[in-house]
Image 1 (cartoon, rainbow, N blue to C red):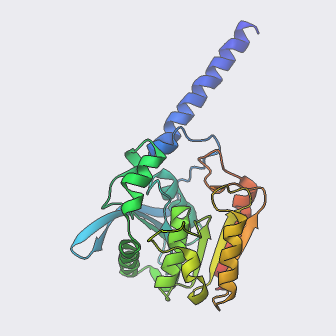
Image 2 (cartoon, rainbow, N blue to C red; image 1 turned 90 degrees about the vertical axis):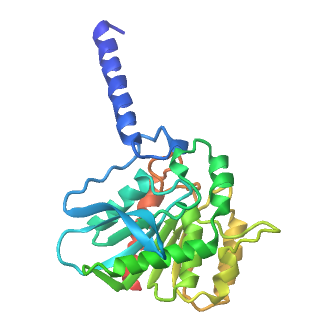
Length: 282
């Protein structure tokens, strides 16, 4: 390798370092450094803002994005992963706003702690996530719907919800809680609990579900197994919600998370197409 090649390689390495540093800004510590597949969406043509959502006598933070113009725009609630409302969730709000949605993501962990500053995933789960109740989450999402309704540019009659991992489980459960939701899309959310679990899981509400939920799952998910998917599908078949589950055989858990090594572009792109069709058809 001559000196010019060495200089070129050094420049490439410096650019990669700068890129890593820039795109990591705003991401949860537990998932940095982010993968080079990360998607960054600008705010051209849309309105974006950090927000405070009233819940009773208190407020929880969140983030929203919507198209510029008069609307009215359909509403899309976004339920975050265990990493909270970090940059990936904000980016999703911007992406969906560019597709015509009023997209809003409340921080559903706010009362228990700031997960974006915790370095280890087991600590996130034990110190924060395990302390969050279904009742609290449903209350906060109800307040978020009320907040969205106050915006004159929203069409709350076209209310949809989506979520990822922990937020995927939340999506199933909130769809059972709020019958006014038109459609829901759950990305690889846990379906079945462990013996002795006190918290409710999607399989428990599947048979009585009224809202149509689309579940998007990975065939190589080591945590949410095909057995779990089959249990959930069997429970759904006992009801009349019209919900269904799609499994992408080569995808792992977190296949939509473009900032992580688990990202599977083919499954993610197909999942988005299925999601938009699901919303359109309902």
